[in-house]
Image (cartoon, rainbow, N blue to C red; front, top):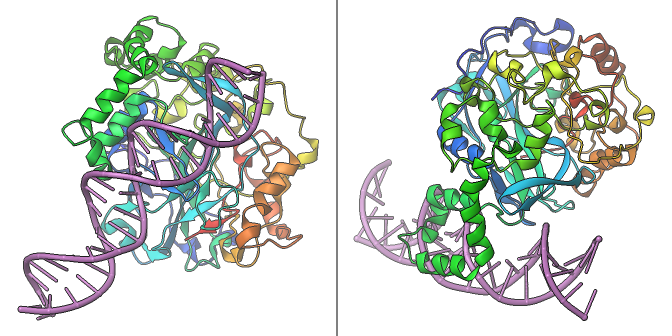
Length: 460
DNA sequence: TCGTCTCTCACGTTTGAACCGA
DNA sequence: ATCGGTTCAAACGTGAGAGACG
């Protein structure tokens, strides 16, 4: 099934020639990205995808696999993936659903995964699906293998970036486009919480074949469930909770899928989010109100729906009803398949020090971005560390910090310091500032999702 | 002190790439 | 150069236990 049904429009904004480098002669408007195995992703998503993170690094399952179209066959592109927090919350698994457990922990060192084939001509990327199989997630903040560092019990979603660049060294000057797929959002965990997710993983992951019911471990698993009354109770409660019509049914509600409401098993694990939803503030709502949303992957980045990250501080205080992610029409940007022009990674026009101090969380949900910030029709300048990753990261950390200035510093210099130590002060070229300022997107607010850094670190 | 929650590690199973010989 | 068999590293979830926290 196609993840993108109509994404070709709204790519009309050409990259400024001034920053497109050699690529400015290429029309970027027809780029399309399709998520492979959308059904598999959806089946996980409906339950509440969990991804294991370990110290040595763990692959994702399902892993990110995309198809590309609309690239210039002879132009070279670089593909990247990063993980963006869904919101500023930490979650816990309670009984049979996820609940908010407080505000998010300080953002770990931010990293971006570069597809090993990069750079490669468009023909290469388009000839077959592109797999990010080897992308690994870790909870080790000191990781030196270049794995993407995440916090356990936090929610993220992958973000795919296509950068037209002849080599890694020109990336930062290149135009890029960013895509997200609602169904790929997940909760990072060190151990599976939802037994349904475990079962799905076992059923679909070839490496877990040995744990399948027909396998040798069926007995062990059966015994386990018997020996763990609480788990058994959980399972029994699953369908019960689904009937309560409580906020945890949010997924169903917002998917607008009657079918989902009927199926008791498709309970929503996102109890907490549902609550938020009830306030018209649903942040994650991976499933749009429009069924198409399930498969439509427009360029959500910087989609107002998907991007809760790092903006909660601002929007908590000024929710935007019309852009509420979870509201029936909240996924407007998603359901409309509106593709967006590249994200801007650099947000120099900002001073983190002006950011309000951490808000009292009080279970308040992150709010969607302000409508005025919803459409990011601008061309991005890649604020990429790749070209400088060795030896330097970009040093404009304060610009992106969703949290505190300290954290942002850590974000930029924490992990990389172990491998690619950033220079003490590496400020963006002035071009960055001016260009970013000219973008229609409003960057004056620290809470904006787009404050989330791109490519402060890369690995390949 | 106790209970809960989260994380870590060793384990057995499976896959697939690498290697080797025919 | 190709094919088939073997080896082994890597990946998987499990389950017990440790550690942190209230």
